[in-house]
Length: 441
Image (cartoon, rainbow, N blue to C red):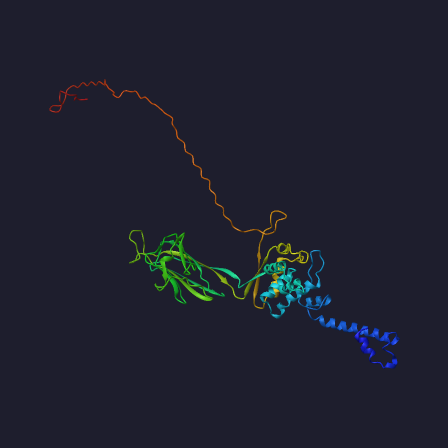
């Protein structure tokens, strides 16, 4: 007997014996009450079908259709059940109402991978009524939490180049920068001198007049590259090859320690200068110099953190990552990645769950499979270095004896038997001599 039957029986007077369990009227009222109960249940189900947490079957499909979401396929080709599909629909809703918090994006990604949407609720469900969270449950939840990571303000590498030709008054390069960034960052500068040496160098950021200058007769030789970076103890370092030349620079005012200016968000102008040669206090007379200054090129690079952006980092091999997390937990058969979840589909999930006006990009962490069949599909990148040396020493001594005897003549005698004969007839008066060979021949 239902409460509907009780209320119907109470409407009849005692004379009708409606309260008698064996009477025909009672059975009629009881059947009518059961139908009314079914009607009430159907109305309640209809009301619940407007709520994602309570609807099921066709009602849940209808809500998913409002957001353009359909049930995914399991590895065996069958459609997923209400529980996992409900999480997918819930993860899609923020894209239509302007949501997109960090936890909402993470939950949407986990739901797309077939994992729990709300890890806090999932942990409570595993703990049960006792509320005791075992170490295995903690490790499982921590593994799911680390599967999807979000890095706000996506980093982007920026590079700006500039060159100048030598002139009599000095060489100057001006770089105009205009980039939007979350926070200012110091650049890394490669200052290369292609013709002539660079002396009396200066770098100035024009908007705030911050910069650095070189000291005294410091020179960057032709063909060398000066590296300037905003690192080190004082936030500045300078080097040429493997030689540290930080001490050769000072602040633009010549008093404070050097510090490389930071690239701000917005526009800024950077001026690189080198003094001209062949002038007083600049020239060196022990080398071949001209009145032209050095020609150089400048390369500025830095990491810019873009506003209104974020990166979602997930494993490239999602199936292998999930298996590694579930291994040894006892929940290996409870979670499975859905069939046909491509990399493009993951980007679509991010696009649906992000907030309005924010750009989200998917980045993949790659782990190569092991060589053997039982190896875990992860690669160990731990670096180790081993140095070993083998020293061998050999000494040899020769005791061989040699004896030589040299016999020879130390004196030599030469005898010449050359003979010459001349015959002359006559001569010139007062010129010829008659005691020698002088004639007409």
